[in-house]
Image 1 (cartoon, rainbow, N blue to C red):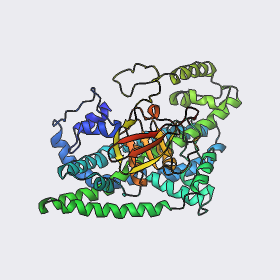
Image 2: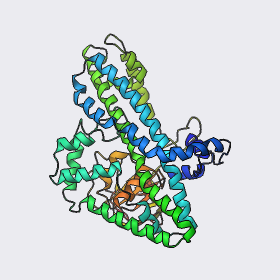
Image 3: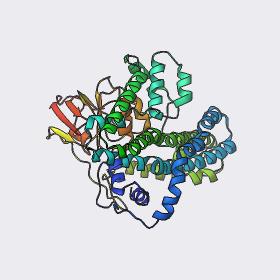
Image 4: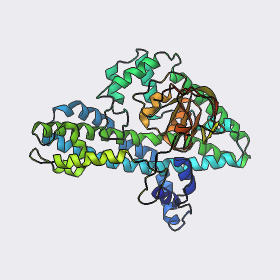
Length: 454
């Protein structure tokens, strides 16, 4: 975050402290907050051209990744060791490039526009309901497309093969290369589809309603401004609709590249295990990318694998603080917090919902009932399909531009984010009232002590 904030310090319209708050939901003491004007002349010259071309540039540079992922994943199991090693290297390079595009797009295309939009809201003291309507209903997010396709799958409009051909790179812990994604194990998709089958409302209808509400809210905002400021406001609102959905484009591309790396690594692991180099194909994930590129079917990695397996088990027992500078100092696992009747965070998606809590640590294993309130530590894109079933979302870590907040606004559910202790203060079965406008979660009554958390 220090690096992101230093980048933001050089960008016109971006504030370092706002960047930290939008992603972390808080401003740690160690975060640099002072804007720098040292590079302002050269940045100002480049900004005009970059702002004019950034959307097309992101779409052009990411366009080839999806068909490449479809092609390579379809043949990855048939590759010999040398072929798999080559494709692994291509996937690694593609992932790195897509990560660069994601970072650049986020700061150039999204961050400045979002900051200026929030500043405009503050200028006119815009009410929460109108502000939320403007931030929602922008459509065309990658995650909401997945939700629509899952609803279509559940209602017989597309077959499972087609769904996996489009979204099979998603899955539990999809940012972890050793995880098992939907194309490898579609059982989580089948469970979700059974739940989606009980939901009558087509998510496309809800998205259309939110787009209409956004346009009404934009007109209301414009109406509060002096005539001299209206042209700027219209330009800013149009830029927000055009730019903010770009947040997920390169992210989808780097997840697709990661999945090709996942598939080729598993293929290499199979070859290495067959030759006795590894005890199991899954042991390949205890090697670094460089070691895997240098590996051969005569290499000996088993001692290294066992050492790293033990190290991973040790790391998994460590609890990290929410932020740190330098090397983090592990902390003791905090006990559950149940005394307070109110959990507080940031109102990231407006609205009010009352319902039963479901504390979720793994969306793949969570059998969420439609209408439950999902409480979790954080989310990644694979959670979007689960969030659609919920009536509200409560998240420990994040801010206004984090994944959970953006998806919650697009699917129209209240969201309180950055609570820090929601997963400890709330328990599965609790009855709560979530207020996405004020950022509060009020406990109406507690479940009995025999309740079981997910």
